[in-house]
Image (cartoon, rainbow, N blue to C red):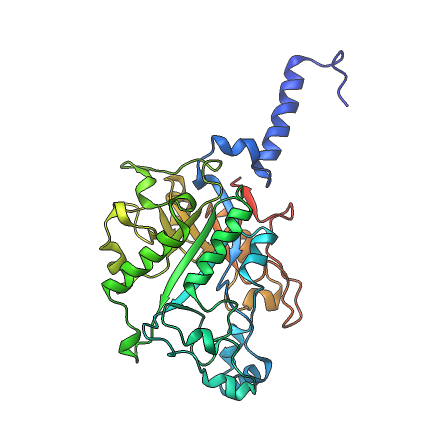
Length: 344
């Protein structure tokens, strides 16, 4: 303990500065978030967050056909469980199913020898949440609308939660023209997000202030209880989203800094030299700590360490807890055992 009679004012000041600095670098955002813009946060989250593991029997069958199937052998608990753990980034994939039943009977279920649990739900029309037809089809929630409703319910039960960043990837099958997206599909996705989450729970592109050299986000404190959605597509689907007016868009686009809707980027390689440059301009960037189970199988933290110091604000992983599917102690978490911190 300091004895106030024996120390100078400058010594006390330096001591207080050390305390504040420690808090700023840690997960205790609290009152300090009131004046810190959101692009100064750093969070850890999950990749393909909805995903259950491929059934073991199906996995072993597929592995005999193609050893690369091992890259798909990972799993997550329910999204709400991940949020309870403290993760503040999610990834959701959706498939177009305008009439229903398109994905209700995956062929892999027959090989697995187990009935597909979501056949009834998959019979309904609407956008579906899963990874790959017939092979990697297991999911915690097949309905995009119901997943949004669950996210909103969790948010309202935890109204002071840090901002949750969600990347949304629109999946299609080049061999199946009916799976291709059209502008009306994109408009519907945009409307669904706005309708289910409402303005109360969204930060949208129109709220950002952009100058020639900077993108200004609201503060961390003002952003609590809200979601930021980022489209993880770079092809025709991105162009379709870009047709929606800035004032009407519910989602951010993975676009260059110079774009009038700039604010977010996806740069999966944490060694990319562009990350710190764009981060300093206020762009929120998603990168990866691991990929295709490689780092977890080798207990290799090199990529995660680079992601932490890259200035990317969102770090995604399949292993915020160690895998139960193969021997590994690999776990992506900050040094203070949290998944959220202020960027050092």
